[in-house]
Amino acid sequence: MDKLTITGGKRLKGTVEISGSKNAALPIMAASILAPGEHHLENIPHLKDVSTMGRLLANLGAGFHIEKNRAILDCTKISRFEAPYDLVSTMRASVLTLGPLVARLGKAKVSLPGGCAIGARPIDLHLMGLEKMGATITLESGYVIAKAKRLKGASVYFDIPTVTGTENIMMAAVLAEGKTLIENAAREPEVVDLADALKSMGARITGAGESVIEVEGVNGLRPLRHVVIPDRIETGTFMVAAGITGGDITIRKCNLQHLDAVVNKLKDTGIRIRPLSGGVRVTGPERLRAVNAKTMPYPGFPTDMQAQFMAMMCIAEGTSVLSESIFENRFMHVAELRRLGADITIEGSTATVQGIQKLRGATLMATDLRASASLIVAALAAAGETTIRRIYHLDRGYERIEQKLVQIGADIRRDKE
Ligand code: EPU
Image (cartoon, rainbow, N blue to C red; front, side):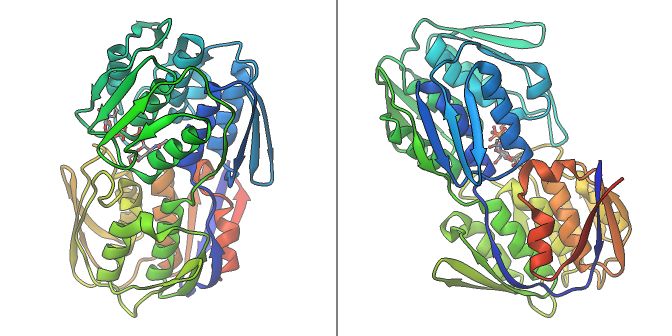
């Protein structure tokens, strides 16, 4: 297992490029199941989760090949319909094969993902949607088995605007008979990107990015050709890294339109954010100001930025109150940030951060993907050396993060434990 060693206190300076979005790439890769032929995807990030999705598709019978940042998926033959436990347990997003498999093959057997480090994360809403569309769902030995000769258009209302649930139902609906309405749909940019990719295959979708998505089923689709959007969470993480180190960096190949809530909050802390053509310049202040934030579904402040924002608040002037309203257990980084000296108290889903002057290096343990990112940004600002262990989570979601950080002046090293 790898560990990172970071010597903090360096002001970040220079230019960094953002990779393709993990959470857009994964559903779009799953969408390739929907049509026979060769699918071409550009701006695919090199990540553990992407190779896991590739393995999963290969396991279903697809050809998967990745070269530079282009993935080619040959889905001429999808001969199996099972997403096995060993793959689903390493990556929850495997559940995104459920909708496309039922749509293309009329059956799917997908391991139930179970809980994870950030919460229970059930998939009941995905299953409810498929049932509404005429699928019969059974649970056997930890697997969901969904069957339908051909899915039928239906009205699917989500109690919670679930991101992967919306994606699964949208993918199921594109080949269904008739019209599907997805109400209280997730509005995340990744949902819109998936809809755009599906439209490149000939799907008929309107309303993606709004609360009601309408899908008119078609009889067949052609292979997809699509360029994945930039990763908004990676962009936000680099903005925080600049802010917390009082740095001055230019971030290229990003899309600020997907980051309104984050940009607003970062500006409130005193960080200067100036759009440039093809990017953005981010300059950290002498001392950050404390700002409150509450995570919400898009266009609200993303839960995937909560941990990184908290790291910054640890050394801001004043007290900030951070509320997590998406996942019930997404404060695992708090105990680790405290090891750096942070003053944080938790009550239910609210963390109160009393800013201190300086964090001090320590040995830390990464617990999930965004927690890992938060520990890195905290360590960049901490005095002395910080070692972060169990960083395999990081490789699931950030492409070459330590190389990108070194490029802008961070003192960070990866070693085998
Ligand atoms: N929920 C249910 N039932 C369901 C589905 C969701 O109760 O059937 C609940 C969840 O437990 C949670 C809330 O609804 O409390 C929202 O969860 P959502 O389904 O939107 O999350 P997700 O689709 O499983 C995606 C991202 C996450 C990101 C969340 C929220 C992917 C592959 N994953 O997860 O990304 O945090 O949306 O924006 O798109 C990450 O990248 O680090 C990550 C965890």
